[in-house]
Image (cartoon, rainbow over the protein chains, first blue to last red):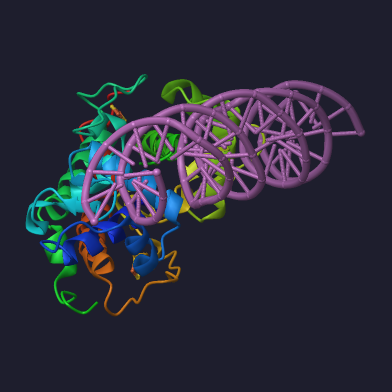
Length: 141
Length: 141
DNA sequence: TTAATTCCTACCAATTTAGTAGGATATGCA
DNA sequence: TGCATATCCTACTAAATTGGTAGGAATTAA
Ligand code: FES
Ligand code: FES
């Protein structure tokens, strides 16, 4: 399961996607509309920024904006930044690979199954974007 | 990611699947061959038994056996018993559903995406069985 | 200069994870 | 009956993770 932090990240990005092109959005505004604890949201947005997903501007009139259009932000990347691996086992993770001790990768049956599961999940999460996520929501807020 | 406990569960079931039809298998034997801490494995096997996946026999000549053939044990069920929900959000879980507060299910875009991801993952995990997992391993041990 | 805003460091309580310990209970066999 | 062999049950623990909070430093616009 995704952590609450990751859910908050998606909700924040959802809001920024809807406001995309309208200039910087304040943390406080996102916090209010998406009901995310303000200080917690600060941490999340800084992480997304450090990962290259957001741009920020300090001071009056400042805030956050998406660095690329919503349709260029896929869900898998968001999860990887905030939540970590998408795969069900470290030894089948593409971005957070770790070797299994006491297990031979060349013959391990569990690994074979989890690779198939990973690919199925990833095919969705890498294809779907923030634009897909807000479809039907634009200008509703 | 799956917990270590769940990985151990799969490895134990893998062994029991290979030994299926040959009578009860002792915890100590599974522990030894699959390199799982003995006392931890005890807990895991009791859980699998209470969930109806295993049968046990106490005393001399006792041990554990699969209650049904390996090809009738799908991976999703194992994960649900030991690890919990497969879905990425509580509000899209089929077996561990919980309502999201501060979020309207009928319009939530995140939820729509996670349902699609869940279905893709589940299509694999519910189709693949312990028999698929040990394919190519039978009689190797 | 000051108000507004992000950014940084540190802390915290509750929960989960990955086990361990010790004995109770049931079974087969002599 | 008694003993060895297994599973089963209850409880405990250390370490990591989760879901935050607190306080102030740094930057910018007006
Ligand atoms: S589980 Fe990772 S190699 Fe077997
Ligand atoms: S995330 Fe569950 S309903 Fe929106």
